[in-house]
Length: 62
Image (cartoon, rainbow, N blue to C red; front, side):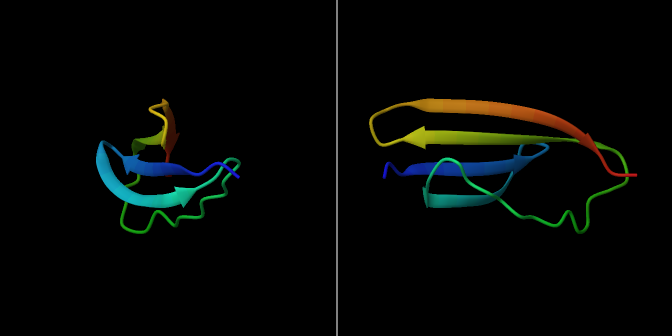
């Protein structure tokens, strides 16, 4: 199994990480305290061999 470091950001603020994450990964997080507006989730996946992947997703809390 190949492990990755996976970091999660909301609106460019660090929220959480999995230092020995693997793909596919299920991340469960409750958006407690976030304002009722549009936000951006960004996920960074870094491999031990120098690979890096970044993806952002817009979401809205109503």
